[in-house]
Amino acid sequence: MAEAAARASAPTQTARSSRSPATVEAPFCGMLDAVLVESPADFTFDGAVPRDTAAAVWTWLARDLAPDLIDIEIASDSDTNRAALDSLMPDLLQRANDALRETATSAQALRRIKAQVGTDQTWDMLPTVLNVLRGRALLDKAQGLGRAANGLTDDAALMQALQSMPLKDQGVTATLMMAMVGQVASPGRLVMAAIRIAGGASENTLMRAGYAPLIDALLAHAQNQIPPLNQNGLFGDTDRICRAVDRFHRLMRAVTGYVELNRSSRWSLVTAALTKSVSERLDPKLRSVAPDVSLALRRREGTDRHDPEQMLAALNGVYLLATVRDCRDSLAVNAIFDQSWTQVGQALEIHIERNLEGLRRNPGDKVAAARLDGGIKMAELRFNQEYADVLRRAKDTAQRRVTPQE
Image (tube, rainbow, N blue to C red; front, top):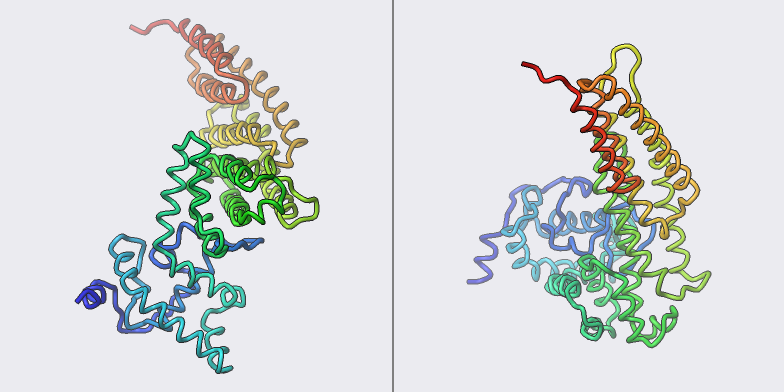
């Protein structure tokens, strides 16, 4: 009866779907989101599944193995669909196991399934994805453990939580660490707890104690902060970019600040490559901040006007600059940051004073007032709140000279 109810509640299809993996927005109805990393990913880690790989496996299962059970066109990320899929998962995994067993004895079956999944990478990661699906019930528990760790002030309790991981099964531990780290606000505390348990901070000591999957999970999540940095243009999500930079910093400091990395080890090489990749994406954004500030605050020749779009670009740039200032220890942008930081400070002092003088001469100048408001917001980020408050009082004093209109 239970099985019949599950099948009845699951989406069904009568026609074979031709949807490609690239168009699958929620592989497995969001069931594996805790361990997914955005594609493309330069480095692979046990427990981390690239989104396009998950989408390809999902398409293979739904389209080629279970078209009678699942309509991939409507299997979206919702509680109802996820519950229905969970009830069908034993059948899906059994069909996948049967298909893989067939490849062991049939070269034709092997070629067919490789063609169905699409790429060698997907084929290589297929066992990993299936193992994650088998242990899917543990993902929520691992995420809950990560959230609980944020509230643990006792290091002994955090150590106990880490020791509860199935360290003898590194594959399962990798998946659980991936899910847990995504919920932890201060990943450095996890590394410190692991070091205390292991009795040392060297790579070999952590590996022998079974905590290599923790470091891998930290690096996988750090790599996952790179895609948000690829946004460009006025309407890029600057808040998301800044959150990604801050998260990257926390994750990288958890590794490079506490673990004694060997110069030529894999972890050392990966951290260097990720730092380079993030820094290269930030470099052009930092170079454009000072010019954007000057363009936003300068007076226009002829008919003066306030440009809201240019002001938004300048504000976003200064916001990013302030974020990079707090995270620069994990980045390789010292030279361009110092240059941009200095230039932005100089530009703000010059243009704020010019706009303030213009407002004193003409207290009713709404264009100068709008530019000054934007400049003060930037000054608060670049300098401090006290300086910004002084400027606000100076602006208010200048505007009080407006003659009241009867």
